[in-house]
Image (cartoon, rainbow, N blue to C red; front, side):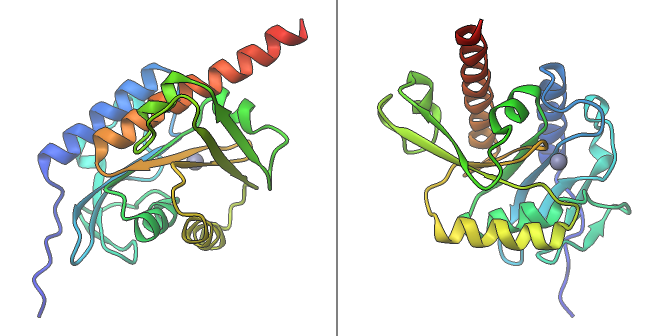
Length: 211
Ligand SMILES: [Zn+2]
């Protein structure tokens, strides 16, 4: 019988908790919103992911669970985030080492009214913080998907979208939040910071232009 490593590495758990606390402090993971994951092992897949319904301002290492490629919890006992399937889709389609999901006012505003469309970001020096981007002249397209409580269907749609559109750094769920990822947790965290900056800039600029 296959020997299963069912535990989360203490270092990974600590890093995910520190990331959640930092994002909570910036208003990107308020209450129980948002979730985080990091790949611990590829073969077989062992993913460390935040538990469902836990306060992200006080996330503790025992609330980080280890799940397999099907999203089944291997340990410690608990229920993984409802959106674990989306994390697994991103990892399968992109090979990412970490996936982060934030609910912020700015990412919600940026996506407002764009379900089925996209948010475009261009001309910013900050874009160079996205993996593989070398110039501020880059145009970053972030698709916006309609929100749903059917997470199985959402996971499938996300995987299909990412397979059909290689090179994306992120996607938005309408009136819900941002998903971004990276080769490791540091890269995924950087992507959240870059994108949240750009969403805030874009929305503040639009407001300034309207007044
Ligand atoms: Zn969410």
